[in-house]
Image (tube, rainbow, N blue to C red; front, side, top):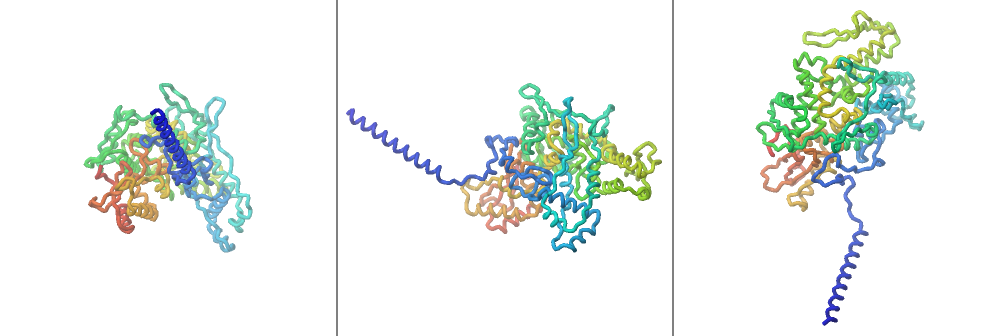
Length: 633
């Protein structure tokens, strides 16, 4: 009996060992067999998906694999074909960029020179007309904060200039027999190295411009961690890659949030009175309520605001807030429109300062909620928000025509030509009943502009346009903005990064869109062949859309036509959690062939179409419709 029991035990041991050996062999074989790994850019989370915020988004690429833009030195995702910051195509080296920039400057001075070159060369001369975006981005590191012995920081101009391409053959191919113009280089240097000014408050509380080397600032940010105040030196953070800056910024603004349970704000807005209703309700809020969570509802439109309604409300509100009819802001003069403070706002709105307070609150709330706005702020306004030096060349971002005229005056050495302009130390501005003459200096109407005093005239006119004419409005706007988002948090960014943070990426990358999208099939995880075909048709249709159509489709699904600075992987809901773009296929009994959007969840309900042509028909109909308004959820 005992022997029999031993046989049983021995048999069980043998079976167990055999099973272990088989398992080991199978496991080892699976290890040695190549597996289909997910694309590295699809692995975007480093915490549980149920509680993802933007600061939790894992970096898909190391700093070593990012490519550096030759125009603005911005580090870009290797999958990007254009720089996110300035839209310069990848592959243009720094030397080529500099040469093409010089060519463009010469063409502006001598329009006939380009055709002369093309007639005398077998190869066409490439042109590279810089956009305002590229010009602005290329100068973003022109000024640096430097610490002093007193612990304060002062702005210093970075005089480093990028080296030209040393390949003379490449230079000759680009230039041909194009005449070298040393004067244009000297003039460009002269204009760029003009005095820098920083807006500060004087003893009377008024905003004035002081020369940058006379202004010392504290470059620290105080945060409260576990009941203890911690002072952080922002100098160490400003050198981080932009993606790391956003993570830090996102973490810090989330510290400012009040949890939903501690109180929230309900806003009921009539769609045909968006500005009126929003102004009335927001201006009644106490300072701490600006950091509470908001739930927006359009009257008569049942919708659960998990992000979509808030985004649409913000889009509609900014459209009215920055409209010329309201009179707070005006578009800049030039090809690329952005918005600057209206000098004559007080003549249009009696309570214009209250509206600037309102505008500052809305801009701060957009930053606090990590939501994008649809309007671009003028570069000088972005610089004022950050306390960054402003110089003469920044005038071109307000009024390109005025800048070119003053640049001519600045370069002119002909006293008769200057006298022929009949200028004096005044400036005229439009008022309700005509024009008003504003003196730039005491008795300015009696001081003629000459070769001797033209520098003083240009400097005073520059200061008038950059600050003096709008100082009260700007002070009101900034004070309101900083009451929502502390100024120290914004100092982390340069002005072009702040633009990217506020407005998102300038163009839509469909590959990035597709890479960071999810699909939900009628039968979960079991797609049919026709559903897989629909997926391919959808992205093929989106690729073939015009950029404006892509933007409208994105707005239809998410409530915003803009893409966050971190790309599509950073789409969020109203509570700040990451909410990817997702397609949900509908069953055969949906009763409609039109796609439906749930902007609160960035979801597109898509019928299962029987052909690509059928899908294209309904998608194009959607993007051409009025895509505002909530009729579901």
